[in-house]
Length: 464
Ligand code: UGA
Image (cartoon, rainbow, N blue to C red; front, side, top):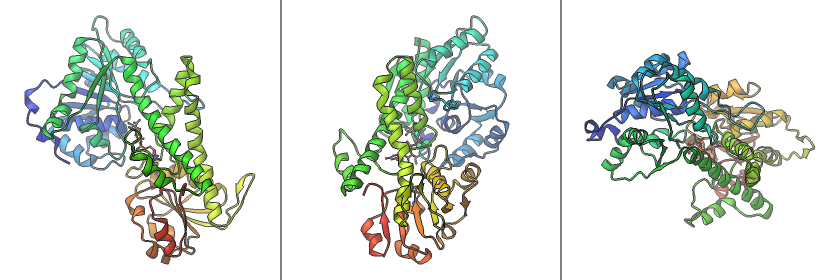
């Protein structure tokens, strides 16, 4: 990746000082990348351990390339981390709210308590006019409520304004998505705020110009900016559930969903991205965002139009039981009313994270299926390149091993579930030497079935 600091015009433009409140995955990545773009940045969080980690050059989660960029920008002096909200309020001209908006316990809607806490806390410490910009994914209407909070809690007469600018970063590709986004979307309520948001994003546009790229900018109203994010995630989720429904049909009809996806994807109106059939989507975003969108639509009286999203969710969740049944079929066990009995079956289970190149196991389909197999009394031995620690804490009933070789030794069936490179490049003959039985469930649809069968494997993919 080219160095963002090659940007020649760095010193020629107005660069507001920026804070990112909430140093989770989103806020930390933004803080580091904006320092890389030449801005003076402060990252804030209430979690002292997290802030100490970043301040000492350690990224407390797995994201390729981020630790190097963190160290470099700490050294540059442009990047600082703090738990002192007064220091944040004094420092920045623009404050980005990047705190989590998880699903409420037992309800489909989003929990906005972290937004409320951070906005109220910041507002109380302000002493001049600044712009507060929401970046967290929220139900439409949140920005107006945030403006009310600010009006109530900031010292009178400052005229602090709220804007919104959704993010679209994908874990494992996060630095790229911040430094080189495929679009910038923001909303401002005044000319002053609009100019500040232009200044904030200028670094990204200048880098694009140097690299002869264009980044489209959509300036819109607050409600639309909020909706853009959830609409994008809902659309992506729908694509995945669509292809997974086609996988079910392909399995029933003896077709191959991988070829099918390829063939429809050549139509540019459809496109070939997010059409990988498999064990379903997970992570900290897509599942909760479709539920929150559907819940918000119901609140606003248009729930009927979003019933399909509940079905997108249901198709996705059914992948998990379906996958357990596929494993049972592979080892010749039939399923009773409570599913199969897999006692005595040793499963080499490859992958625990919600996708490759991350250690994130939030709503991970792979981990959910592993737990279901264990509940069906299988002996499940899990290996994952980066997700072992998190998975162990979440699912202590599973066995975890530190190498692929330990996982597959003596296995009755191999379940390859998350397309880490280490798994996609497995050699059927070498692997065959290590297992007890040559049976593989390719939950990633990454292998050539004929090649594996030619090495004596019983191969089962998803929808093929
Ligand atoms: C997602 C969106 O892709 C980002 O644009 C968005 O900014 C982010 O959520 C967010 O809301 O913050 P992310 O959660 O990192 O990003 O993960 P994705 O790469 O979208 O993958 C989500 C899930 O879908 C994974 O479990 C993945 O394995 C699955 N998936 C993806 C499929 O099953 N099939 C596909 O074809 C693609």
